[in-house]
Length: 351
Image (cartoon, rainbow, N blue to C red):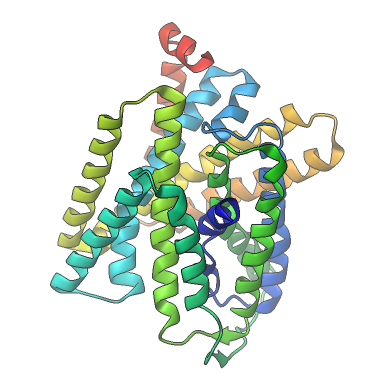
C-alpha cells in the first residue's frame, strides 16, 4: 500500500485528471509516458536504494556526468519545492492577498514538515488516495477537447504532454525490495485512467482541491527524496536538511510580493535543469542494459523526449526568462566540468 501510494503521489492523479488533453493526444502521450515508466521500472530492478537515479549515473563511471546530474537534479527539485506552493495558492486555488500568503505558508510548512517527520511514509497513502477521491468524475460535464489541426502542432503536443509523468522517476529515491518494482507500472496504469477520463470530462468545483492536493503531494515527495539523497547518499546532517527546508519556506513567502515574477523566474531554470538531469540519468540504460535491443530503443526515445523537453522550455521562454534558462544550462555544464577535476570530490563521488 505504501509503495503504490508513493508511486501514485509522484504521478499526481489529481493533476492528471485536470489536464483535459484531447483524447488523441492523451492516448499517444500515455504510450510515450509508458516508455519513461517502464525504464524507471527497469532501473529499479537493478538497484532500489536511497540514492535513486544517482546510483545508475555512477555506472557510467564519468565524474563529470555524476556531478552534472547531482547539481541539476538537486537545484531543479529544490526550486520546485519553493515555487509550487505559490502555484497552488495563486494559480490552482485562485487566491490573492492575505489568504494566498497564508495558504502558501501552510502548504510549505505541511509538505516540508511531513517529509521530515518519522511518519512521512504513512503520509503517502493519505495524500494519494485523498486526491484521487477528490477528482472522481461525479458531476463532471462531458466535453471533448479539440485536436490541433496542423500535424506538426499535433506531434509537438504529444511530445509535450507525454512529459507530464516524469516525476515518476522520484520513486527511485527510496529503499525497497526489487520484487515490489511492479508497483511502478501498476501506479502508472492507475494514473493513466485519470488522464484518460479527464480528456472527455470537465471537472467540477470540488476537483480543484484534488489538483491542489496533487501539487502539495509533489512538494512533499520531492523534498522527501531530496532528503533521502542528501542524508543517506552524502551524510548531510539533519540540521542542514532542516535549514534547507526553512529557507524554502521563507523563499516561498517572499514570492508573495510579486508572485508572477517569482514563479516564472524559478520555473524556467528549474524545468530546464530537470530535463538535463533526466537525460544524464537515462544514459545509464545503455550501460545497464547494453545487450537488450528493447531497452536501447526505448532509451533513445526517452532521451529524445528529455531533449525535446529542454528545447520546448528554452524556446518558449522570452526576455529575462530565456536568459535564465540558457544561462543556467551553460553554468551547470561548466561548473560540472570544473568540479570533475577536483580529486577530493571525485573520491567522494566514487564512494
